[in-house]
Image (tube, rainbow, N blue to C red):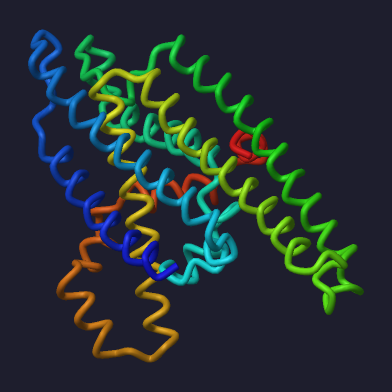
Length: 279
């Protein structure tokens, strides 16, 4: 799994570069087809980057699925947030609602005066209905995958008295269990990728770019925050200082990843009804 570990690091570095490029691209003019095509091309690049990751991860799952759960390349914080060896797909819908609310509130005065920006703060009724529909369908699939994982765990528990004989089936018995677990992970990753594509498809190019930026900032922000916490627990004072100076963790906490903090703050302060809606 060392190869996938290296791949994950290089993939994350490229994601950071892609998001930097799309973040620094001027807002496309609504009347310019070339602007729209350019931002769509950048969006497609980011989506393809995620697709490549999950294709590579599927190959790794067939070789050593247990390492995907151990995820030595991830921080303790990242692993604590994992659902079937990755992020929970419905998190993306929470992110859409949060980003939309933040952007709407930031230029509500412009909207009242008839000025439109076309960003995530201006989702149409049709778009919101589609987001809600996809969220319900995704929750259903998440539950099915969770049931599959639960059934796998129950099978392992039934084999416990016979572990010395590898579930009574020798190496083939163990391989059968690992292959089943691998299939569960691959299905979860397919749902993750499908959800990314579906959300991007229902948005305009500008909105899709903003969504992917927010998703990547959440992912990269949690990663840096988790790495920082791992270093704190490990007593790596020198490494912490280097990380602060080189990677700009101060800017991370002060605002670069404000959507991350807003996302957590919104979830923590949600009313019972809002919390029910988001879960």
